[in-house]
Figure (cartoon, helix red, strand yellow):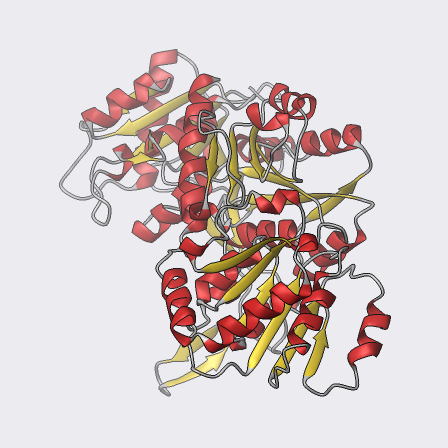
Length: 554
């Protein structure tokens, strides 16, 4: 009841449907379509009674199970289709006879609007606080550069005065049909609208009306939508590989609400997020982080922050979040719902950990690069050690190559926090065969054009492998030594911990590879035999399966 007004919601649900047979009974995201409108009405703080009017016994049974009463209209005249006005009027009259009372406001709620929120229904009812309002209907913004057609002159003409952005056009609305609320005195067999009508504007999501299969697909995706908070680190010492992965994931989470959360002391990551225009927020300390997670009404937390503590993960779990971690070798990984690690091997007894190349997410740019064709001559060498390169493996490799009297081109990509960058560049700027780059946005182009690559044993090896470029790896630290993918079996030459490898050994290995065309062909063949283009699908399907188990446990 609202302001002493007794309120009836009528949900008209036919058993037949031409485009989607038995539409109202079909399972939409594991629930019959009719369930959603009944739930919306039942959760209202103002609605007194919910009635489903139908010609179908199966719908009637479902409606009663979901808490609605049922009015059958088989007693009406059936020689011609029954109008919606007549159905609602009949349901109101029959329900009033059963309750020995009259309603003040009668609301038609379409069963084909499953995304309508209870808050919107209540907002519609609250419009009747104004006694001058007779009826309220839901609409959606319909501003477009519309055109008409003149039948007499057989020509098209604009229905707008001036071509401007959509937001600058005069307001125009289209009825969604989701809600039509009216005072009882205006409910007749041939009409449900009064004279003074108010509107409630819906979002695009809420306005979806399932008419065809395309609408069904969109609605189902919306119903599966989750609120995902991605907590990521990106600063000079670790580079951008974590935020790159998260951005690749976010680009594929089309139907989910995404919020990036990043430490306010990570300006590198903040600048990247600004560039890509994803919603993000910064936090200062764990307390503020958790407050922002609550404010976002988070359902899933993705941590791409390397090792985590058990205290941190258990705190997330106590908040009720589903927790997904990447590259977590910390003790917190034991308590996360899912841990993905494409780089490092884990204890196989931990059932929540999924490791290996199958869970690597390629950057979008690598999906569209052609595979490398190996040529007999080596003309282009790429040196690329991402991050800070504290041991200056870049300089060591460059000196090794120059000592061999190699005459081709050398491209060098320096990490964002490479030490003494200006000094390094000044030493080689007189050599026209050497080009130095920083802040490269099209790394796939450099990789594809290279004949031989020197890099670390990190995630870049997956990108290289997807194109099939012969590569010599030097690990930057002990952690990278555990990256088993960077091996001969996958087509790589791994020289081990870079700081322990002398320049002579690097030079000898380089010359050997340059002169061994067959070896480079074999490396290319092994790399291209590995499927690296389904990483996101593998991650997504795993998360979906584990999330279902998580929900069942709650």
